[in-house]
Amino acid sequence: MGRGRVQLKQIENKTSRQVTFSKRRMGLRKKAHEISVLCDAQVALLVFNTKGRLYEFSSESSIENVLERYERHTQAVQLVGADKEQPRNWSSECFKLTGRVEVLEKSIRNIAGHDLDPLNLRELQGLEHQLDTALRRIRTRKNTVMNESISELQKKAKALQEQNNVLAKKIKDQQKTMAEPLHPPLQKHLAKILQVSTWALQSNTRHKD
Image (cartoon, rainbow, N blue to C red; front, top):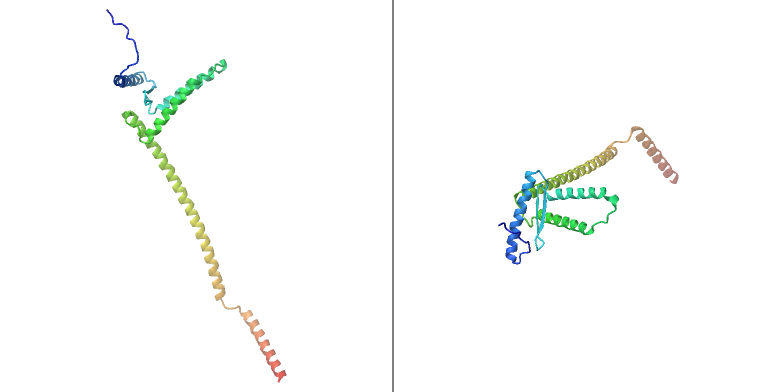
């Protein structure tokens, strides 16, 4: 006699429920991994426990890649069926957006180094790769900004040096001009003026006597 169909219902005992959740979650994760490997499929798995904790699996390096493909597919389907003017399912939209926010928040916490215990080796390696890529980009941008700052300072230093050279040349020219003797014709002219002035002074003196 065959076994009857087992009726599914919620497990009342919290401890048993948690144990069953862990076992079934790992089994579900294993099946998702198997179908991704055997069938070369992209798989994304999201599971929330009763406390709202998120467990995820992705066949890609990041679950966001699969979710973005799902969103593009959904948008394409909506565009094809837009002419039917079907009412939009706002509940479904809200659910998708909420799941998206949860995934992004979890990704931010992981990048900050929090909530790493549930991650497996592949997820940790993917997170490490993301951080390495981000760090390389930050260092490249930092070096670019530093080089631009150094180049700008060098231009300013060169301009100041050129200004100093111009001022030094002007000062040198002025000092040279002041040190040069008077031109001979000018000396003769001044001597004549001095002679005439002396003669006039002597003449005035004699008239007074």
